[in-house]
Length: 171
Image (tube, rainbow, N blue to C red; front, top):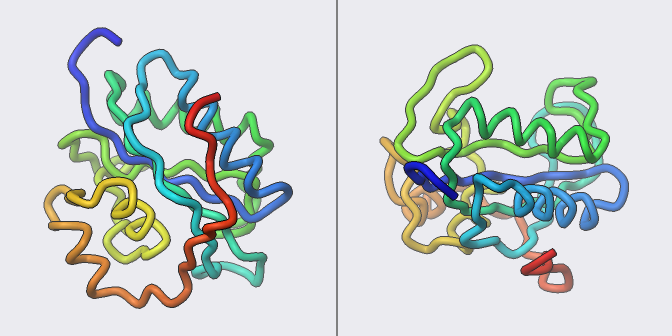
């Protein structure tokens, strides 16, 4: 991996089809990205849907990586990974086979129509922050604060670690 490296945090979520296979497949495709090295992967969590229509529970995980890609480039890759798992954007906050959200990409700050960094809702989402904290106990949400402190202020009752499920460390 050549060029300046940034630390990126990506949140994966799925609530359609073989949920665990979609998470694993998303992780494997991220690992196959030449400009990205996976540093840590969270445990798998099952979460109640937040917002949107009535739908099945989600499985969620967080990937911490080093990358030479900037936010827009990494967003393109995230969309490619989603598409490889049959993601269709039918309904805002609706069910999905795989969602790959960029939470942070280094210290990058963006407020574009296609990409806002850091992710504007991350500070409120226990289904992002709990897995992130598990993957990186010293995590900081740029411009906001320590992830541990953010988690302490949230209702986490809808987020449950699935100790019976895990993502394979390597493809």
